[in-house]
Image (cartoon, helix red, strand yellow):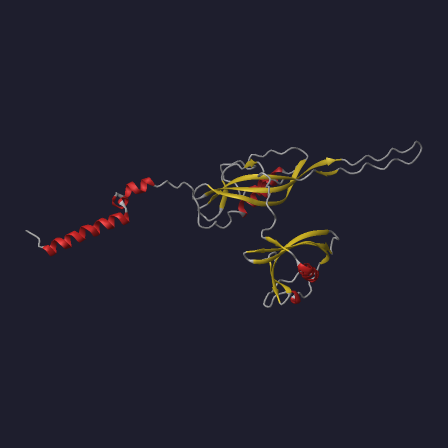
Length: 308
């Protein structure tokens, strides 16, 4: 069968279209699916879209019970641990107490969460623990001179509290079929994370001269009213609203004030000295404020530290 001139032109255009499509898609699209998949690295991290309920609270509660005990009542500790431990672990989770020594956890916080599989996690908990010793006698009463009344009896035996310490515990937990949690293996004592360092400036932006100390005057009046719970509308841009403070603070003075200009506009960074009306302690706080200038006057349009 012979093709006419028109048929040859159609065939030629079809071949060119096919070649163009190959160039656009790439040769890889013609390889078997198994080869292209094999070329991709295998993902080993197991991550869930959202943490299941109780993932942080359960190991935190366990840590409180695990690191708290009374020297004269070890069975009480075992009863507190019972709701947390897998049946394969001993009732004290590897703990043996010492006579006369106890410990109490003041507070505990989840510091890190690492997922090990679909149902298992390793949760690192930081706990502030206060050890103590019982059976510590107070100083003996002074001896009575000869011929005088008998000396007073010695002070009763008491408790000596030792310095608090911060412990980091890695707790292996697993989700159960009933929707709960269990500590399926012994926890691990882990080192504290390294102390953080920060070498950059505390704020960014180009420093601008506060002509006539107008910004400093604005912030001085604002913080005096703000910390004492008074109305601050006069200092704000229209439609700007800030939550009201409790009024249990007294404004002391304004320290360094830096006026900056960055991509977001003008910023004011201020050191604010305040007095706690309850304890009398003095604090230096640092605030960052969004500022705007209008008709020769400065206004506050936002406050970064407003308790959101």
